Image (cartoon, rainbow, N blue to C red; front, side):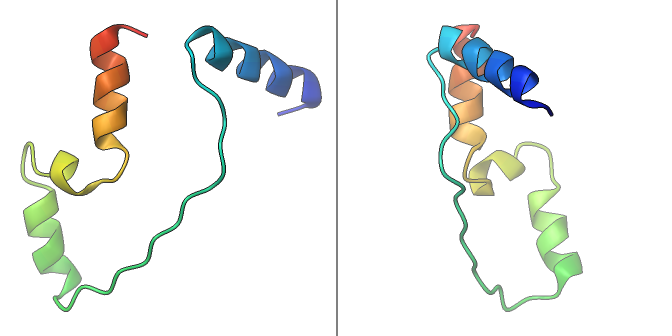
Length: 65
């Protein structure tokens, strides 16, 4: 993305009341095999319970922004 595209992207976000922020990182060790974890989070409707940004994305979607 060049500077012009970045400015346009930021302007489009601003029209929706959004802005780019700092990166967020979180690390957590789960004491279970990856296959077991995947069985839980891949069930329909389960991912939104665990992903940190899902609630915000759903709020924006439901507002129609």
